[in-house]
Length: 225
Image 1 (tube, rainbow, N blue to C red):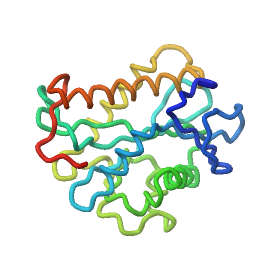
Image 2: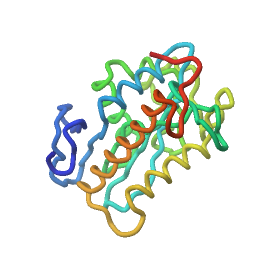
Image 3: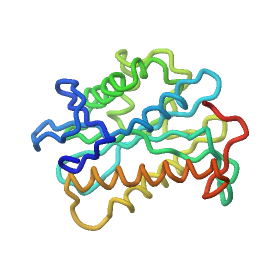
């Protein structure tokens, strides 16, 4: 582990497109993506299937880590469902790649999607539906001619798609991540990177427990391989 990024995580320096495991030194145009191999595999599986797919949600949110923006992503894990509670029988939201950046404009978000395309070849052109919290930069990027022109649906404000995807659930996921990272006091980038990795690891372990009929989730009746 170097500079707080675990070996199982990718860091993409969007300026040159290299995939490395080291956070670059702080700078005016710092941009990098945190994503595990399992997150990328699930993102490809659950957001690109033509018949059974999840909305890919992109949500810019605030973390107290200095002059940086954080864009979180999430999608439904279609292999499992909530075993009990308010969302019993519904697929839980899985945290996707996290984008840390110093600028917040259309080109910056397009850079993020270009990075995802390098991690998952042609992902931008295979995903079936994308959602946003209404952030102007994200919406402009989605509407851009540089973006996929044949999306099944672009979901503004996380309007429900097939009754399963809503903004309240996305906000709840973001709040869970914020609580995990820590709401009080400034968090350094290495600490933030480590906390995100810990959260994702814990979430993946809970998904895997469904195989043994244990934990907060059950296996879905129809499982995408």
